[in-house]
Amino acid sequence: MREILGRRRRHRPRRKGSSAQLEAALTCATLRKWPVLPGAGPAAGAVRGERGPGCACRDPECAVPGAHPLDPGLLAATTDERMVRWWWTTRPAAPVLLATGGRAPCALSLPAVAGARALTALDGMGLRLGPVVATPTRWSLMVAPYSLERLGELLHAQDRVPSSLRFHGEGGYLLLPPSEVDAGQVRWERAPEEGSAAPWLPDVESVLDALVEASNGAPDGGSRLAY
Image (cartoon, rainbow, N blue to C red; front, top):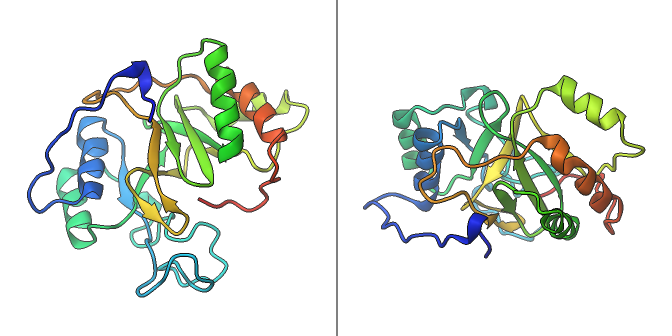
């Protein structure tokens, strides 16, 4: 697994009685001041890969099983340590969701094949990238916060924006490692620097062209969002 600046992750012993999800949520909330909340998670007794209501929301057509807010809702996202501890002590395996926008990072996500292609192109341009989240089906590049107005201007300048390219801005959310959902394990393709309170984030316009081009060439049009 590659990391920003090639630094190796230092092993940090997990605190007794804590889950990996709790540790990740606390790092986001208390160190980086990124608001988080637990995701819906799988339905009780659900078996990954089987058809049916695999999400706690019980919707058989759920587009992102387990990987969306449910209870609490997105507006409850917080950086409060006590609340974060309570959520993941109650549900230690709950997915970790970042509430994007505001002072928190935004993100752009695209199919995994297109994501790998886009990273290769951006690396070839010598562009410094921020954290990149990977699932078996989609990759998400974190970027500096952007407004909907600015995003609209940038998209208007594009000839075509494929439906497989998704935008996680104000009022949105992003699934973070080490969550595990219906599609599989969430991991860092490019991890934030260990202990960094403010990981580097590129501007959205510096990566948009490469992501649009890579998404246009993706095998799947991506009309359905899935993690």
